Image 1: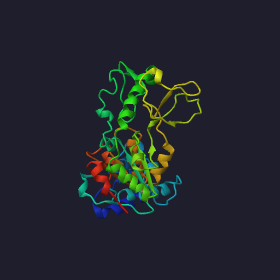
Image 2: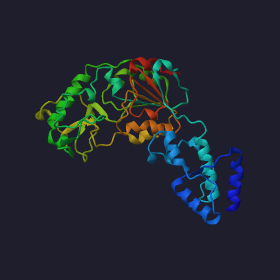
Image 3: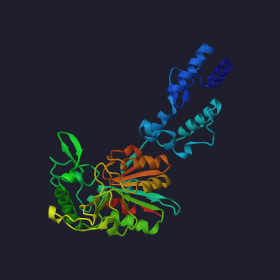
Image 4: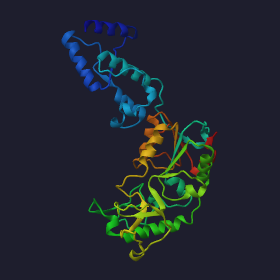
Length: 367
């Protein structure tokens, strides 16, 4: 231990500063090493503070502490040092990890009008993940939940920010399951109005630009939080609707083996609600509050594989979609946001390009 202290002091001497103890986790390792130094040497060469690699990672990745572990760190931060639980091996591994952290990783999000950025170059071999939210459809006239006053009787039903209907009724501030079970007629009336409105809306330039990119680039993965069919109307054939599709319906029974089907019906009374062959009612093919979004395994694989991640018109307020940018960034992707204003999760993006989707998207990608 005495030789270790002498070596630390000699190494730090040219800098004329106290060395800083770095560890993963520092909260445990620093106390452990400090006790041994005081016990066997009588002094510590370190200052009275330490730098925790995981906390530093939290700052670099712009995420919470629990999300900042090694499994979410970019692969480029690691050198091929073995994790053997031998003190010296692990010290070398953690030292290399910290040096990679400090090697110039971006720590600030650039927020500026879209015309101050150059287009995004997309190489043939690149994997591009595009997530679209309510903002892209709002430019075509689709009403969002934030503009949906009157669509739901707000005193009765809670409107979730990124789901297409509440599946819960609120009583005295407590949410209890049963919105659909208690008033299926009201739920279907809401969707009848949404279907009627969506039938009158056409895709805009942003939808067309993404459809054109899909036709040119096999590596595009298009995921949307929207339930409207505007991507398909613009020509997209591979859009993944994580929250379901407005013009599809399915049986309400989880035990029924019938599949979702195309349905443009507008059911406004209880008597009009169709029945499945099993006798259960037909419900909208929508992810309601408290339900698991569709195709999450497929989405997770695409996030881990992507080289470029782009979000268009999503508020960044509702999970799991709000966490996609951090997941892509942790896997090493460049992250870009497009929308009129920075989203709530802006710190997860390398760039926030401010502007309307219909103005930005036609010239956003170049091949």
